[in-house]
Image (cartoon, rainbow, N blue to C red; front, side, top):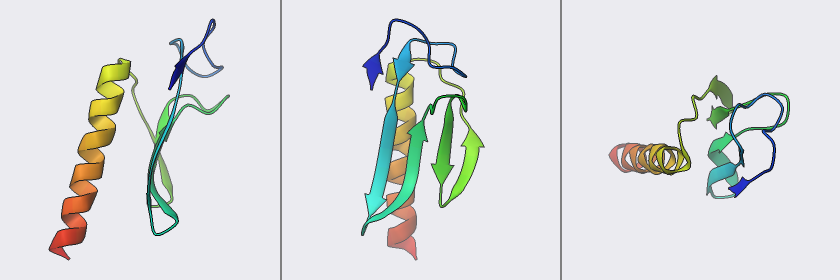
Length: 76
């Protein structure tokens, strides 16, 4: 995650980010704000809108999702 002088087209804040959880070479989870798409997350190949609130909240949300996915894997 890095701070920019101007928002990425599609986002209203000054941060560019790309956080990924990769297992065995496969991207299971990714939060990013690709130019033109705005803030969103990818989960198991599907894309969902994401409401960016702050860098701290983004990291907390990402870590919570990784924990949830890790626990799901242990329970299957």
